[in-house]
Image (cartoon, rainbow, N blue to C red; front, side, top):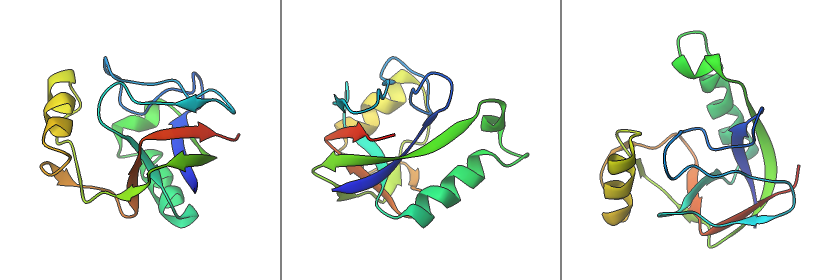
Length: 118
């Protein structure tokens, strides 16, 4: 299924840096170390999230991100995201099957594998 993924423009890594972060090379399937991989089904949802990351009030603006088109397997809607970005918090979030945490950005999905096309 076609989806969109937000990645770091410099090293093509995940947004959240942890022991579980991934690198997303072009045209290679990537599986998560724990849990699932976040993605967006709609371009507009990914674009809105990218705009949020680049806003001057967001600490993420120190690093630049890009949105890339991707293919994904086992895409499912996600309602919640981990409330913290440390290793233990991420692990506990996925052990609870993603049911606890804060509200996910609009249009967030998960997938079991992803291949960035750009």
